[in-house]
Length: 89
Image 1 (cartoon, rainbow, N blue to C red):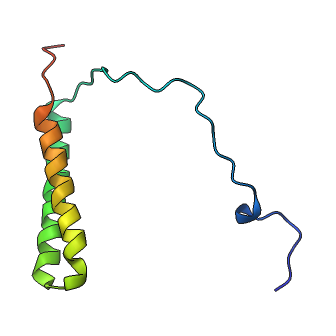
Image 2 (tube, helix red, strand yellow):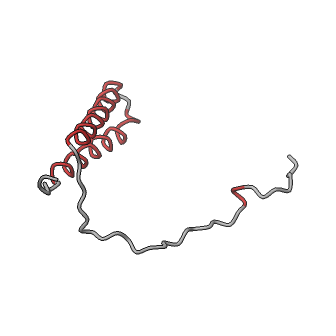
């Protein structure tokens, strides 16, 4: 196949962006509304539904995916429950 002479994306040198700023501090405070928490909970339910659907297929190739879906949902749930309340706005 003939080459058009144009530089292709994959032919360019890899250009990594250097961090322009310092990383954010580790003691930042975030607020999450009850509606946002409910939205995350709904997403966790979707993850669980997908996991159960894969489990029902009883395909050995899905074992790792099922394990990762369960572990991911558990980590998210644990993180949300560990959030400290900052008081009322």
